[in-house]
Structures are given as structure tokens and as C-alpha cells.
Length: 401
Image (cartoon, rainbow, N blue to C red):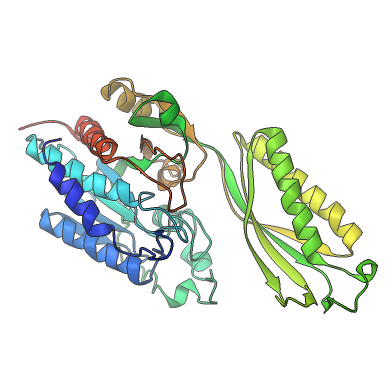
């Protein structure tokens, strides 16, 4: 790499922001101090490179090399927010690599024939307002502001009270963008098994988030006989086990990773449990079958427990197949790197579904672990990823000196 110090310096600058001293994980939730500090860093990095910064009313940022809004624009980047107690690489690696790739292109004398933008989309993880890829969904109109502003975080704060939203006068942030190439740390073991530092994504599994509202009857934990209870915790526990079993049998993914219980007392039978199921499958048909099987078993268990279950699909994303010509061209330009699917959602999937030809690069994760402090990437692989991104972008925007 021509200027590895640029990448490493940027990475050192970001490393302390939002990091927990207790766990080593990151808390970079949208519109909170750490994430706002990262956005300030983004603006400084863009300004230092003479890029033109554009921001939409939702907090999405794009820094342009070339004329913003010009037809044929190429976009790269990722997001800066994290899950609760997340890893360092999920999101920021793509943004830092984008700036490093731009530096490499300039060092190699590239003069893009098409405008090139570096993006930082807001609330990709859905860790605060519960809607994954919220920023990119808003940017492409996949969700309306009227719907989004009513989303509420865990503290009862409305998104509309945090973000002013559009006035109607702002131009679309992604106007003129035709192509999006996102670099991301791999969230799995595909590249480890293939002994490759960099890979290309073929597509994204369909996935969804489903809220289970399980209602029973609050009672005394000591004086209420077991046979006299209507305990929603039992229904939830058996539903979580059913989700695990159904996903294993089908070779798919189902996870209850969050729940809330009321009244939340040690000596009280709960009156209500609210839990969220994350389900993913290799096809939309298999996803529907998996979700239906879990819901059916939840209902059967509820009838035995004397409780009720209501299931609400909070967000569902269909299967994404990245634009084949673009995907294959990127893989070929990079020397035939591995092409593999991903089970994780990404902003690239939202843009592809909106008609913007999209592709993704993955950088090897030696632990195979993501959404955790154990998420990792070797510096040599990160630099290889930045080089690959620079090479792929050069092919997309045109070469010159």
C-alpha cells in the first residue's frame, strides 16, 4: 500500500471513541455522544481531503470527490454506528477504507471521470430505534419520514424529537448515484475457510425482526400454585427453544436476542413478556416457513399456559442479489477473489433493492465473530482491503493521470 500510515492513523483516531473500559466493546448508538463524535471525525477527514460534504435531514453524510448530484455517481463507504457492546470493525472499517482508497487513487494519479462519494449512513444497526438500515432506507425512500419519526427508543424517546426531519426543500442526497460499492468486515468464516484476505458478496439472505407480545397474569411467586398460573415467561422460554430447534432442523437462523418482562420482580409471576425474534433464511420461502413454524409452536404453548401471543413483523427485508455484472466485474478485476453470500443485512442491500447497482467487498475476520468485542481483522488484511477497494473504484470511475 502506498500510504499505509493514513489508514493506520485514521484507525488509531477512531479506536477510543465509544469504547467500554469494562468489556472492550463499543457503544456507538445513533444521535448519542460517541456516534456524533464519529460524524465530526468524518467531516474533518472529508474537509482535509477537499471533498464536498452533503448531509440530509436524517443525518446521512456523503463527501464528494467531484460534482455532487452529477449523473453517474459512484458511492462507497458504510456506517459508523454499532450494536450494543459491538466490535470495532462493523461499519467503520468501510468508511476508513473508503478514505484510504481515495488517498491511494490520488497517489496513483487517478482522475475520476465520474463523481466519487464516501458515505456514512446513520442507524444501520437499528440498535437505538429498532429499524435496521434506517438511514439508507430513508435516503432511498424505502420508509417514509411520517413512519420513521414515530419510532421510539428504549427510553421512550421519539425519533421525531431527536431529528427535525425534512422541510421539503432539500435535494435528495443520493441524486445521480448509479453505483454503490461497500467494504465490510466479514461476519462469518467464509474467507477463513478459503484462506483469502478479501472476497466479494453474491447476495444477502432475506431476514426480518418480529416482536412477540406474550400476555399472562401477574401473581405471587410464592402463594400461587404452579397449576393456577398463566405465566408468559414459560411461553417465551418454550418459544425461544422452538426457534432454535426449527432453525437447526432447516439449516437457517433464528435468534431471540432481546426481551422485556413486566413487572420484572423476582417474587412475581410476570404479566407480560415482549421478545424480539431475528430470523434469516437462504430464500424468502424458507424464511416464511421458519417464521410460521415458530409462531405456530408459540401459539400451541400459549394455549397450554393460559397466555396469549401476538406476533408483529417490525421489519422484513427480502432476498438481495447484487447486480451480477458489477459483482463479476469487481471480482474479476481483483484477480478472481472468492464470491460468497452473507446472512447479515447491509446498506448495500437497501440501495440495490432501490435500483442502485451495488456490490460488496469483505475483509477476512480471523475470529469469525461479529457484533461482539471479539470481532477482529488483521492490519495486513485491512490494508489489502483498502487496496482492493481502490482498485475496484478506479475501474468504476475511470483511470487517468
